[in-house]
Image (cartoon, rainbow, N blue to C red; front, side, top):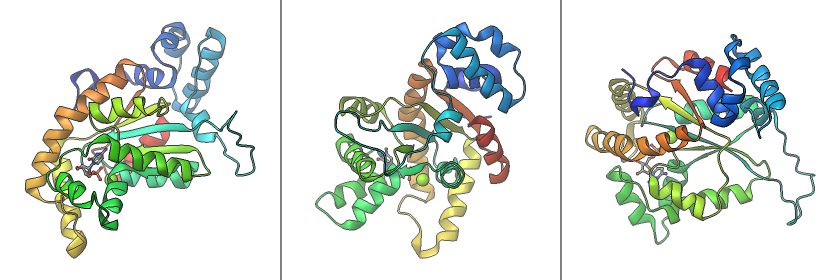
Amino acid sequence: TPQGPASLRHPHPTQMLGRALLGRAAMTRGAAALRRLSTPPTRARAAAAAVAGGGGAAMTLSTVAAAEFSPDAPDTSAAPQKPIVIFVLGGPGAGKGTMCQRLVEDYGFVHLSAGDLLRAERNRGGEKADMINSYIKNGQIVPNEVTCGLIMAAMEQSVCKKFLIDGYPRNADNREGWEAMGGAEPAAVLYFDCPEDILTARIEERGRLAGDKRRADDNAEAMVKRLKVYKEETGPVISFYDARGKVMRINTGFERDQVYASVKRAV
Ligand code: C5P
Ligand code: MG
């Protein structure tokens, strides 16, 4: 069985897509139109039309995916290009990195992995390197000021402002800190739901294949801690965004082509 918040285990697919695309209020207004929708691509277009007709601010994921950011566009401080943010959450081994890479290729997102940024900062060996490493080794969440600082710096440096932010916000400290630092409200949250035994098997395999490049936390002992932190700390973040109609849940407990097909259907 998929793990994660109980309310998310079996959402009706139309309800799920509708919620993620439209938000709850618009969902109510567009409910009649949405009930008639069946195939995913038509569904997304018609959902957008339903909102246009029914009122309410909507940004569909397909709109997001199609949005272009031109390096030549004027970017004055009065009217800066607003970043579009999609958070990607899921347990260790859920396929966040793999799926984000493919979305980058197909839709031109910029992929920022919080874990990768933290590992890079640790490897740079600055004054926070030891602190970051001890959190990572124990599967604990690094204080937000560090992680959020790294993400926001990377966003500022990027010309393209369409971001997939993976592995963040991982707990309430991350989420509240992001908001306090003026982080963009996410257009959507992709929630990669995967059974725990598959997560464990994938991390075992990843550790084995990495040889001497094995991550400090890709081992059985750290994995137990990471799963516990995921359930206890990230679960509530997913519930928070679900209550705001942002969550698009995808079962990622299959092989990668099959998973990517559902990710693409969702986008
Ligand atoms: O997402 P990933 O599995 O690469 O994260 C690896 C580790 O990086 C986490 O277990 C955690 O220690 C740290 N991390 C964090 N805060 C985040 C993302 C990752 O502390 N938002
Ligand atoms: Mg990753």
